[in-house]
Each structure stands twice: as structure tokens, then as C-alpha cells.
Image (cartoon, rainbow, N blue to C red; front, side):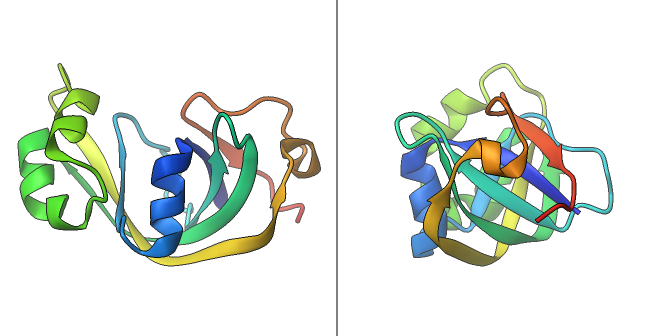
Length: 126
């Protein structure tokens, strides 16, 4: 099953150029059968630009997450710490195999009306 994640374009593109090997989240999907993340690049792109298979998901305190994944984060430590400010724990999703689409896909083509605030489950219709 797939989940659609909304990601800022600067970070989304880093996933597909290989410089960002972990996607960080303060909250995460609960369904164990999720194997693929579909990437929605938020404003100003506002399109689905690719997907990646999920490797491990690490759930830990932010400092420990950074120690384990920071060298493959694609972001600065300051940005990382600001993102997790006032959070006791967070998640790091390992990017296992990224595939950028040849052309961006509009949300309406995925039968999704609004971009997700964090994530949304996708029905296997495509």
C-alpha cells in the first residue's frame, strides 16, 4: 500500500538526486502494510513528482535520530532541530529506492482533492 506525503520541494528534489536518504516526520502513518511513499512536492510545485520504497523507520528522540541519520539527511542540523522543536520523539523514514516520474502528476489524477497536511493513504487505483 502507498501513502502520499507532502514534502517541501527543496527536500523532495534531494530525495530524487540521492542527497537526502531519510525523510523526517513528527507523526507517521499507523498502517504496517505501507511500503511506498508517493511524494507530493508542495508550493510552488504543487504536484506529485515521484515515489520511494520504504526501508527502515527509526522512532527515537530527535538528538538520537540526528546522530544515526544526520550524515544522510540532506538538511542542516539547525533545520532538523527546528523541525523537531518541543517534540520528545520523531521518525526517520529510510529512502530505499527512489523513482522520479517523467512528468509531474496532478492530485486530481490520484483522486485526491487537497494536498495532505502531513500524509494521506492512497487507494491502489493507479
